[in-house]
Length: 414
Image 1: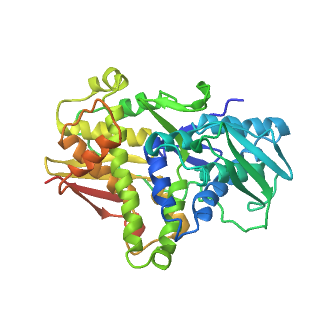
Image 2: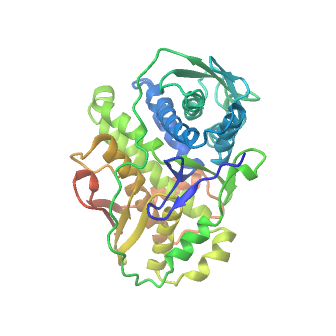
């Protein structure tokens, strides 16, 4: 069964069964996981990393099965397995699952592969890295049997990151927990009037060229999305915002003074590195040279436009260059799924929370300033780029989180 998502032009994000999706890189997925896991001595990881996935998959598949009532039990299982592979997370089998629980297995595993690539094989006495997958399975199984969210619990018993031939998850009915609902599309933003484009770049053509790739793990034997010399996922747009909110809410109590600043650093620095990863791989690809380069002028603003178009095409809202000079770049982000989720989950805050957006724009500015064109995008390259950024800074001039009508960020390149 082929499960495909839809790109919503009005929201500039992907969706499947009322759950927004964004294209996310292996780098971001695994670096955030490791940074959060390192907090494990002070923060309970299960509600942060696992339950966040559980509520999203439950809401998504509950909506999907409600709208597809004619599917029989086996077809429902296949739908879950196909969706998991379509999104690039690997090959999932639910054959061992019944209404009492059971087990699920992966014969290929995005998170395990990425962990080994960036950090090497994991020690045998460590837990597996499938926090997201364990939550995904529990939520999907709850929807499969039409029981309330929080009915099933799970744990990982084997992980390919530790050298096991398969990743295995035990699923069981646990103590019933009342879990919050997914924020779904969150609090949507009314779009401003279109900007006057002085760059000469046809942004829609750039965006459409990337969307036309129709990235999917279903075309691969491994259920992975392999493109631009890297692995990608169609990830829940709400997954990492849920993680961030949970960490921020417990930061001062669990991490002590400076806890909030530490959480900000995790997401902003990972997002900066993610900019080097995305731009280094995509802007130097044959796809870019054949389909996008000819649409651009030779000026810096054109490259800014096209680089922001990547984020729009990846489903992260509509990213627009409002103003650009050699030292200042003003960027509007319309319908940022992250902000939409935050506003639905916690409402307005005293301070902006655009850590990921700020980090990404800092990296983008540094990448373009250095006119970087790496032959290999690896950890060493990304760390060297981070060290070279000097005093480039990004400030949230306006933020919907603190009551503004839009998200506007100013990048200063000194």
